[in-house]
Length: 497
Image (cartoon, rainbow, N blue to C red):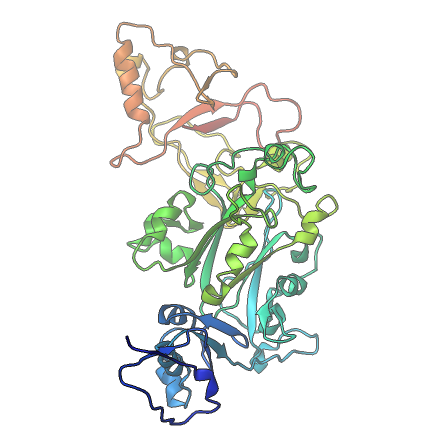
């Protein structure tokens, strides 16, 4: 039986050529516990900190492939690391000097070449707007969200992104300043990305099983102080989706022959997100579902905390985030609060509204006018030609759908283009529901009852050949004296089906 000879590379103190004599029948086994440190420079990946790379795939995913431009300048970091990985795992140390130039106000001096990174502070409250969002490239002067790249790092020894540093860099101006918001993200990588943050879908994995209250999950006396004991655990989950590249030119994307199916001039269609992500040309960098409840562990012992899940991938993705746990613990006194469901929107149709005249949603990645789908400022005619409706509380004005074609059919004994007579519908019953939705009940009683139902059903059904949305024309009546400033008695409105 051949004798095993162990070769310990740690005994070699310097590079060079060494001669070893051994019996040809003996097997050479390299000690797998010996790990080499490869030092160099890369334009991609973490810097000023050692990164454990067990194999070539991991190294390439973090630092990219061989950089010919750097090799022409005498830097062979990638090639050296790949060679060493043939023998075993390595630690890769990418050394980089940053430009920390600042101006007289202490802000990054972009004109002097300062290395900066832009953060985004997100609102997690339906009634509060996100922090400012600059979607273009860096320019002079920089925005308040553009900070020195080094400011996000703990630099006491080896550098590493620190949530404390990220929170400390957030802008503190305004009544609901960025540093009071509960969730922030920064791209520490070298490549532009687009970030989508949405409330997680309750019906899909991994949220199944979390549709229980905090009281049920933690116990009646153990609910975190920032949660209501009847909050659903699932309502604290969000999805963070990161896509390579800048996807914010909505006007161009809405006219693109491929991507126009997923974009309007105002943004990505939220119902089409999943379909968009699987398209060719869409490079998904990161997709994480997690909770904003700090250090939350499910009953299987799996950590679900969004901050940890995202930051564990930072060496690969460059995406780093922070949950403002201090503000969360003091949520009662913090100007930014938590509500992904919409409880805080209840008062927006009354005199206690907080959003002012420009009522809009702007939290996470949701942005739309709160009343745009059902608020109109002028009456419209009932002719088949329709009448254009303009919602002026936006810039530019929104041109809403026309009244459109009215159902004309001799089955309903209507004269001209007056549609279906109101007498053919039962009186509105506010307690009548169909699967939880408000509904109107027909009053077709004649011998052609079945034909009337069939004709109405066919008319209101959206098809590929007739994709326009369907509406019911209604009149506003019996409004109270106050509390509904957008409507007046007698107004005609379109009720979306």
